[in-house]
Image 1 (cartoon, rainbow, N blue to C red):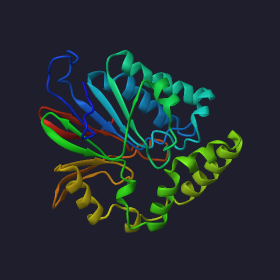
Image 2: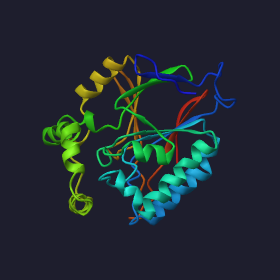
Image 3: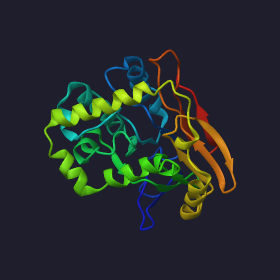
Length: 265
């Protein structure tokens, strides 16, 4: 069982008093699903992951961008969103812990959603100890410090007062703004990836140092890989996309044998 400590870290992977009988089962990590009704094949793959693949897990960690956008927990009134929340809740019903971190698309996921999904919210970044290894978890957008415009927006968007003002808008206004931003994002899908939007060595080194870890797991960049950095190993989670002519997706599995990147079943 994962437990929070005053150091804002969690320890798990070793059976102990008070832990669930299957506490030595693996941990699964995924991110950047960008779920929405417009990508039915990706949604179907995620449903299979939750119902079948995750059955082997002790805990599932979703490190941001579960949804394509999130404009407030009143989205739970929508049938598609309610369906995804109910699906996620089946994890806790089966004794599988679910942890969700905010991404750059769904940082407004709130307490109502977490309760509906049976999930525990994780701050970004967060440190866990899994099977004897200390690991820093992050969505990844805060590491893209070369994009100064986005970092200014991120700082503003995470402000509670700014969020309260936005959530006070009528729901349709919020949705329209999100749809406009999504359209611009889709328009730029085919553009070459700029180094400006990737993580910077300085930010990665700072996270290694601050977290006192030699392993980082994050998503956001959609550039899945295992990187050997001066401070340790950095794993980048894949985005999921089975609706635009390819087959992208996968997850990390951590168990007593180590960390492995696995494809979708």
